[in-house]
Amino acid sequence: MFERVQAIDLARSATLEDRYVDAHCSVFTPLGFVELCEALESLGLFPYRFRGFAPTEPGDIEFLALLQAHDVQPASQLDNARLQALAVQAGYAGEFGGGRFAQALEADVELAGRYQDLVAKARAADLEERAGQVAGFPTLDRGLHHERPGWEDPRIPRVPEETRHRSWAKRLWRRLTRAPQHGP
Image (tube, rainbow, N blue to C red):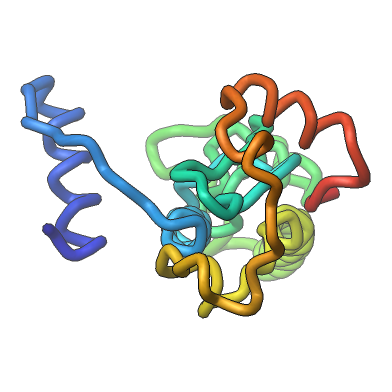
């Protein structure tokens, strides 16, 4: 197993160099999966919201996660087009490229102040939006959802035998059509 930073570096280099990196199946507990998603989100690499989550049921071996694509840009990674739009909003009327905007910021202290304020507000708005995304992560009981508890665990509700081995599609449909799901 690789540490998270090392794994991200390997993934980036494989993508940039267009080379194959051997990969294997991963097995997660519900809590481990959510913690991994939270870690990816903190790195700005999880563009999804949890729309539903059902942890492993007693006597079963799978959990279900329903994710929805979400295109919030990480606050630390405002793209050039957005930064240029903020520069224009701050009052910059020149062309971009060749360091012209940087020169204009050095020459005009008021422009620099307006621009920095707008960038700070954009980052704060993005952080607020991302905070709303984080709120979609399910809250799980570390003791119950980290390891597969045994049948003798008193926290496990008794499930009739006939409902223990339904197909994943039937369980997913049942879970999605009953009471409100986790997430926004």
